[in-house]
Image (tube, rainbow, N blue to C red; front, side):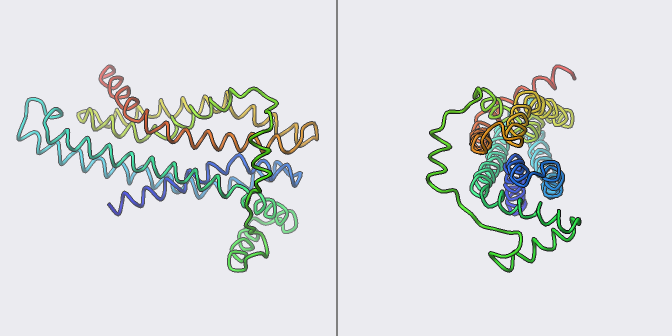
Length: 289
């Protein structure tokens, strides 16, 4: 359980950073250093990438241990149909609960990301300005850690969105078609479950579980294609329009807000599609093997 809790926290952190990714563009627009903002955020994203490299093997080892133990015991009890034995089915049910707990971590991480967007935008804008003055990423990181121990000074700032701002974001009519928000929901839900569904598909078809896990890349790549083709270009266009003054900043704020909300809904949708995607990957694995 300790390992599962660690994976839960890693997943929450990864999704927190992913939620903040798009809001970094708002900092770039405000400081008029969009390219610097995108480059500096890659430093922040390194932490999420490192967490991601830990998450997958920790999950995989947990699943492998559960499959091997249940499979070997079921083989002694019901050698003709191991995966249909009550013992193995019980393991599948327990594994499903554990993986759904990890998805809950994605949801909570996204909620945390939404709540800290105002603080992040202000703090990241300060980081961009500090980089312009110092020209060193290491000095910016140093100033950031110093400001953690001196609240209200340096880079780090804590802010909350006002009720008036939230009311305006919700009531204001969006100037572009809303379809890209639904595409983001679909993309984020698939991205959330791709590895988890692959691991569960491996448990459903233990004889070729490595193949089933690798099949998860299909789901992951599909989510990336949807995001690259249907979501990011829209956000990039609005960002450019705001940067050159053709549109008001509130339009970019609104899009970032609704994308964050749709990502949150995507993590909830992933609870629904988790097992269907796993069964689909299992069937595809059976077909190619």
